[in-house]
Image 1 (spheres, one colour):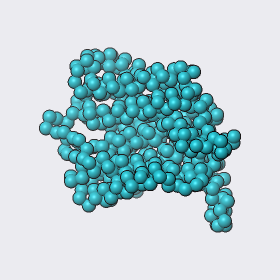
Image 2 (tube, rainbow, N blue to C red):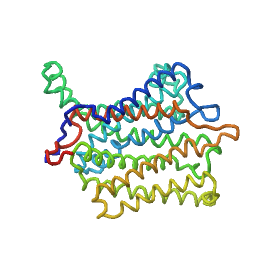
Image 3 (cartoon, helix red, strand yellow):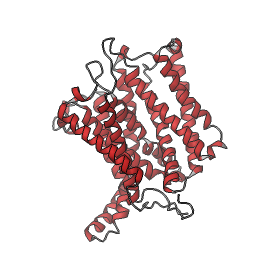
Image 4 (cartoon, helix red, strand yellow):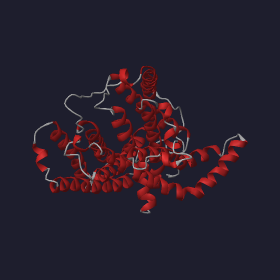
Length: 398
């Protein structure tokens, strides 16, 4: 079977996609309603909890789930493991969609979204207007730049499709642009590795600013490192999940051998993450916090179990050849990373006894709608453009 990427073909909307489309429509309607009534009426946010579900999930967790492209770039281009190349394009697509919709979530969450243009342009021509000591500025600038980098990385898939277009202008442009992008790809990839390294670690740095308001089980100077390590694990887990689902629903090759190797890497990073976390707690004299039998210790142990169980599952070379086994381990790692981010940004954050937060129904449905839109865009793009590797034979198709 050819490993060359080819369009899926066929209708972009199936029976399941149509139901997902309705969720997306509900989300869009609620987003418009949020802009009409403001954050106060549409969310459960308050002075103690200025960030809620839209930041904790759509941005902090969503960008980590979109780190598949970053994680694969580390393997393929930095460590020169070219055998994983068929998995790169789907990972980059997931990253591009995840980061783009995270940007949308930020625009939904801020009080005055019409001033967002000031983030990339507000420092010009006087660069002194920027607060260069701000971790949040670094996150904002890096995420914006990374969205552009991801779509440029993915652009060869579009140019490959358009260069055969019957429209002569589009075909000529695509042929020229394809050559230019390929020549610049090494520099684009370098940016694609640097930028997420910066902003994913800075997402951890942001919560260091909360000081004593962050519970001791999560409050550590190593938050930037732990956020970076966990996002890489989540990136590999998403690549495994994506490949397994593409194999199941689209009849594409499963690349089990490659996924088994990726699972092994994810297991080693998970073990390193766990060792660092426990050693750090021991050195700072905080091990006792794990056994206080409160909501914080409970959430801590759920996190640890969700990291440790798949790490054990992925240590067996024989079991890693089972696609179902890999998928289950990957889903647990995604849950683990998601819990770690939710706990750091919401559960472990203690603004005071007079404040509480729980997302409103509109908040939850906006998040569901954003996820639905991402799924629909993914299906539409792999249907039309050469993203997934290999076209299945009739016998392999489901």
